[in-house]
Image (cartoon, rainbow, N blue to C red; front, top):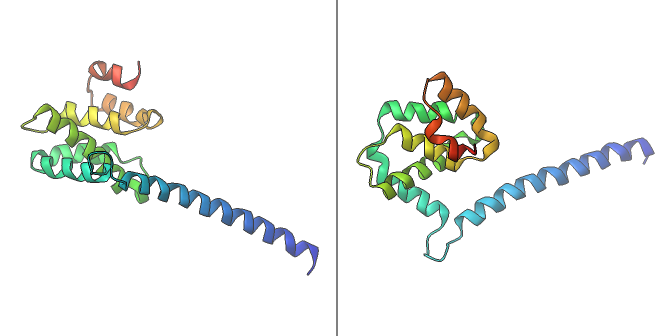
Length: 142
């Protein structure tokens, strides 16, 4: 086999290792979330529980706000991110005994459910909608 054919094969091999490692990383994270904790339920079970307990509290306007907040997430991952964020919002609503879904619950849940690096879009969106950020400064980290 000519030597020039080996290099594309090496590059392809390295690409495939990277591709499988990345996929394995995300699958392993999902596996860990599905593992039962000390209470017998996994993170995904609790997420589904909180969503089902608060589904009736959401109005169309609030669903649109959540859709707008998760808009920068790539389409492939948007549904998973939206469900994760809705689970955190539902958890806050259940723990506070909310009788209706409020804008502050949605914003706090979004902040708590997303990494700091992804909150830039939230700040821009809230400023565009003229929503005061002062109550959320502590959660936003300053």
